[in-house]
Amino acid sequence: MKQDTAVMDGLGVRWAVGPGIEVTVEETGPGQSSPPVLVLAGMPFVLTLVPPQDQETWPACVAFLRQLRDHAEELAALLEARAGRRDSAQD
Image (tube, rainbow, N blue to C red; front, top):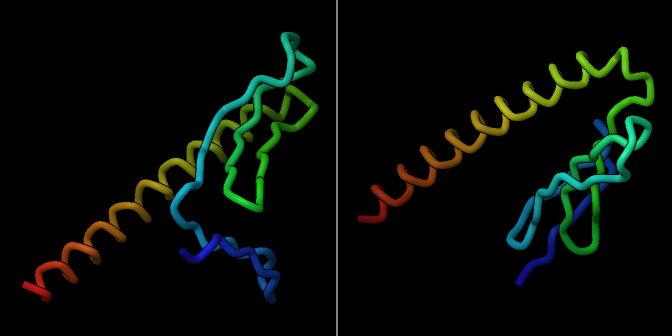
């Protein structure tokens, strides 16, 4: 089985997502100074999205996370549609 890979290219880091990737929200502590984080984990890489320390900028972080969610949904729909077309072509 091929493992997940991350490579540096001209645009930054590219991580090919494969089976076994987990996405979780983890608490970092009980207080306001320890906000929860979003963690994408897959051997051997972990990506942690951390809110800014300045709580006044959290609304912008919330907007970004919602864009991320929306575009992840859009990508999922495109992949499903293409996989469906491939399945239909094989029948």
